[in-house]
Image (cartoon, rainbow, N blue to C red; front, side):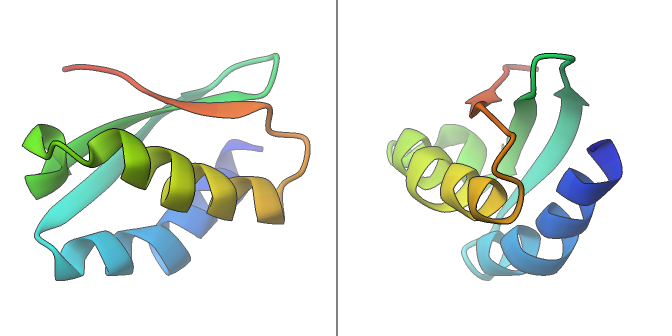
Length: 76
């Protein structure tokens, strides 16, 4: 599961976030299918980070891997 999530981040999500100076790092995929990520760059301090996380990162991952329950951002 971790490899699938990492592939989606690499191929679909990071290129988009990089256009705005941001990034995302996979922290873990839990046994109960929760993805934890760390936002970086411009995304880390952006007031719209939660919207990006929900509307872009979570939707993209869940559309490819329906077993994923949710995506959460963790702080450094």
